[in-house]
Image (tube, rainbow, N blue to C red):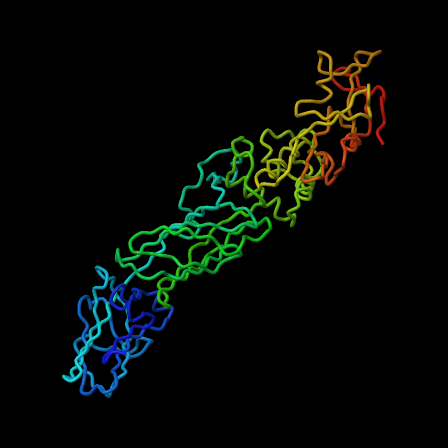
Length: 475
């Protein structure tokens, strides 16, 4: 140890002048948090007699000294003569005003013993650290801002970056969608004043929901700096909507809090994967569509693709023959069992599956059969059915009675040209899900065809269809 020695808490002797010591501006939040103040300790070596002179020079208007770490008893900033018998003596430092430049404050001690001349100094910068914005780099970055609750069209603009920005009011920040089971990436923008301070690395840590914990040493030289961060854990592996997700940031310098900031609340849609086929107008990702898909899928409490497809289709209830919906996203606007025809139900389920990124191959197909081979299901695409096997009038005619036309008939005696179904494969498993039979699934198309009771002939008489003959009865 030197004959006289100044030690600033947390700062090594060889760093006391460059980069020096640092204290943060203690604002109202700092006062409320009640952190203890860092100490500056003056020591005297063996054999030193008399006194020492302690001085504070430079921008001393930006700090205040105290005799206690709680900052209760103010000490003067003018030059002091301190007896050796009073050493060691500790002053506690609080910052009030940001330094105009780095290391503008100097603590200086000089021995007054002519036999042992010596001096030591510590330079100090009062800094202010701000978290200015957050950009979620692992956000799917597809959500559009159509916030009209009745708008399920592919409207609006993609929410801009940054998704969080200081100064916005709660819930003015922009939502994100994120894949479950993955780490979260963030570009965090900080501002450290004064520029050019060049302090040691800051220790950053956060508290938040699963997947939003960050812990990393970051370099902030002064001025504005963007730091790329990756969470140390992964987002919980389930489909969910989070509306109250805030992250508490704690950033420490030399063991002392430099910033404590709660950023949020964020609104986050946690999906199975990236939304699919976003260039198709039916699958463009919007706030309303994502919110609806999340509401539909979250209650299933499963991430198994087949379970989800089965549950989404089944939740729409019985098909409503007159319920063709050009935009299938509107189905939940209607009561269960009146939401849509079987094709609309299958289209809606596909919309939801694509919105939350369900993996697998989802084919919307039409299953039907003709009188030539009534037990041989034909798997066609939307637009296909008995009509595509027909003569010029759009119907299959009876070979002996050409005014009789062929229909697939269900248990309610409704006439159909096909059964719309989802042919869905994931992994090694292929399943068929008929849109007209809630919670039904099968391994083959024949079971979909068996959703009907009969293949029958009808004739139109004075504007009404009259039953004429059963061609085939389904089990």
